[in-house]
Image (cartoon, rainbow, N blue to C red; front, side, top):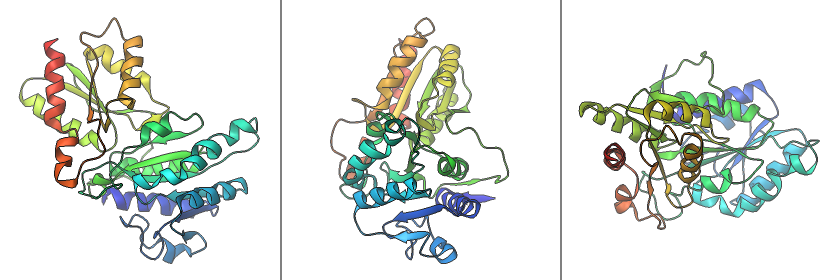
Amino acid sequence: MITTFAAALNAGLRRAMDDDPKVVLMGEDIGRLGGVFRVTDTLQKDFGNNRVIDTPLAESGIVGTAFGMALRGYRPVCEIQFDGFVYPAFDQIVSHVAKIHYRTQGKVIAPITIRIPFGGGIGSVEHHSESPEAYFAHTAGLRVVTPSNPADAYFMIRQAIALDDPVIFFEPKRRYWDKAEIDFDAAAIPLDRARVCVNGTDATVVAYGGTVASATTAAKIAAEEGHSLEVVDLRSLSPIDFDTIEASVAKTGRLIVTHEAPVFGGLGAEIAARITERCFYYLEAPVLRVGGFDIPYPPAKLEKHHLPDPDRILAAVDRSLAA
């Protein structure tokens, strides 16, 4: 069945709610409106306003309420309307949601899924195109994941909701309208595993979320120029599947990491450090990073210069191959 990314998420949420009556959706405008990206369209009509709850404009209140519900046995799924609005809830997430399992020596769980549309590429105004994933990946006690395609969107949202761990679920908003065929009966890839989506031999490109499609396009262009790139979709940002990356780099000898977030302090730095430690004798060139610039997110007319695109990824590949 050919489905958009947004519709795949809707189907995954619907299936999770059918499977478990304790699954409750919460967020601003997710009920009657169906969410600003229509990800929750028709769910309130079908499940009622006790399970699909339109909340006040108060992110701290949304996550705080979800935390209390989780302690009472529910599995809340919070929607943060845009990435730049998550910061009022940051204290709830990193101080309480992430720590309650450790603080209680494993006696209490917080099975909360926090959905966050993230990244740029849709021409939004200020505060609507952020990449805050490193903040959460740095926080022990949280799982952080991001699908890059409709099939992963469907399966990963169901897996996230079923987990007893709190999950930050980043959705690349510029991919909401991407379409792909989904086999809803297929076996799901484990949530913490990376996926090799293009096989190659000359260099490895690691990407996640919105940049996976850019990396895949770069691989197609490189093939026309006689170079073979392997593209790894990270999928899980915490924990990171370093074994899959290591296996790829052991084969190619080169690594380029790309993400929309600024390069400084980004996940690419952690990946570069770990792979340098683990693959020192395989690497034939330094690990390179391609990301956003170290600036506040630019105005919409300039975002195409800020976001990593196939040309910038290929420029890094050329540097790596020339080393």
